[in-house]
Image (cartoon, one colour):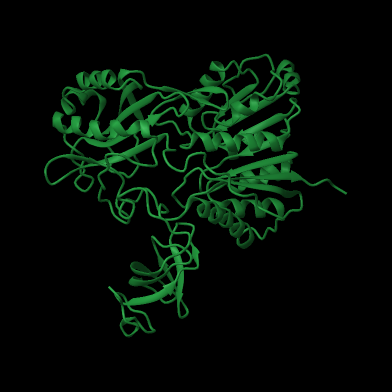
Length: 494
């Protein structure tokens, strides 16, 4: 339908009106940005270069949100989405944008955050590390479940802006080896007659279907998240043990069927307890030449290949001589800790649980190379220790606790501190401790450029550190998310 200019909204804007705009930018959340008069208009599913008509859905004094109504001119960066439900599913935002342009946008997101928030000027932020696979990269997918009008179990991501499940039989961003399970396990759950969870009423049993695969090993875990307690499993899921055995028999890559118990009325997916019904509770994955054990709820980068590429950049930039003392704050299960430890001389003593770094043997050994991992999640620390033992790495010590509490207590001075905090960034006290202990180098890995820029500003504004390199990396193709590694070097006193 062609829209006559006389039908387009005139200033001021009102909800429901049509406005003609040209998209000039993308937000950090993935929406297109245009202007109508002095008002900024945000429109999902658009690309810089699109000229379009948008219907306004929310109008505020200085900005408004709109919905794409008609494309008048198409951006050169716009492509046809690979997935048939890309315009509905909330799993991706950018399937309509060429991958090459996605990488450029993500680099610019980092540059703009460093400038606007950090007040930092760089000669260049490196081009974004491309994911080796723009599709099929996710090694883990967890789908909420619901019931169709015909009584069939649905699994998929929520529709954009809602909690309505968009049913999927395959997902182009998850590892394609998981697709058969996604389609067929839904059918098996339907046949079993297990009640599906209703989040509004907090009734029903099966909440989520979670699939995890070792990208390099091909081993798969299947986990059902259920609303209930372990002692009532047979009552809640009659026939689960026999069905789990059938799944193991039907899927050659499947190594374990697990149940996670979460009876809280919360948006948090996993509860505190996970048990194995058939097979084993973990899969093996290979990462940066090492063997890792992953359970259903283990945090591990969802894009194995890009994480390995970023790990290579970190190792290259550090140019280790093998005798450094390195602290890996927020270490998780040792995803970065253990690959770094490979490049250090071995201490010759096993890793220890205690926070105390005592004894001449260890302190002298530390000068041969030592990595100290700090992590607040006790179960992650146990897995990290197990992974270190599995790979025969003896120059690693892991500590259970908050970084802000444990970092000041270390009895050895680190040469390098690796930071990989959650999206909210580092606690201010952590940054203050770094300015006291003054490691020669800091590597800050971030999944949110604004909080990275904020923390880098604090460290660099003191004049004690300078930013030498920033490497964006695309862990999440087809989405607006970008990760990056920033490298800081201690300034030499004059």
